[in-house]
Image 1: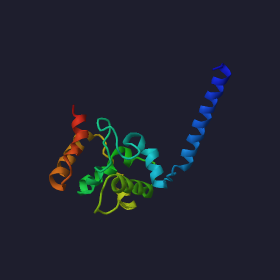
Image 2: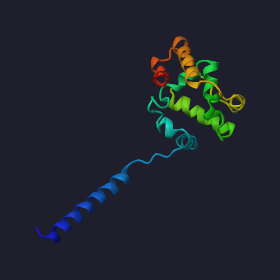
Image 3: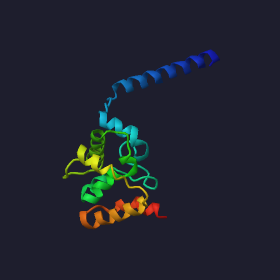
Image 4: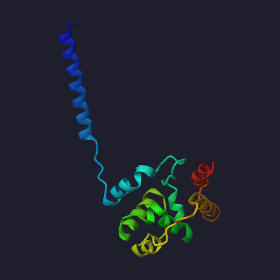
Amino acid sequence: MSRLAVGGLIAALVATAAATAIASTAAAPVTALNEVQWTYLERCGGCHGIQGSSAPSEVPSLRGQVGYFLCTPETRAYLIRLPSVATSPLSDRELAALMNFVVFDLGGARESDRFTDSEVRALRKRPLKDIDLTRYRAGLVERLIDNCAAPVSLRQYSALQGQ
């Protein structure tokens, strides 16, 4: 086969592959994100994963777990008082919406009150600063396991951080 024929064959294969890719992309459903999902993706998704699943040795996974933190007033408050949450530049309304998305849509919470603007406003005034957050979280997790039927998998992040 001549170089010209091989070149033509390669060009035809590339064109076919490109056409197939374009056709499959056009046929693929496009998922539109709402405002809260965009906010999560921009502010949280880089560390916690776009679906709430992360490398637990680095940062806690949210998917199917963070909803348990709504079980007690102290653990509920913890979520808003985390320094990265409490000091977020989001408004109280935006932060309440974001945290509701996190705990209900990603975290699996079922029966609980949603965060309100006023609750967020009050809690974020007292961020958890100057404490060992890993140790504090570990204590909260033990109470959730003992009192709220939370799974022992919640210990994973704290156990890895203690190594």
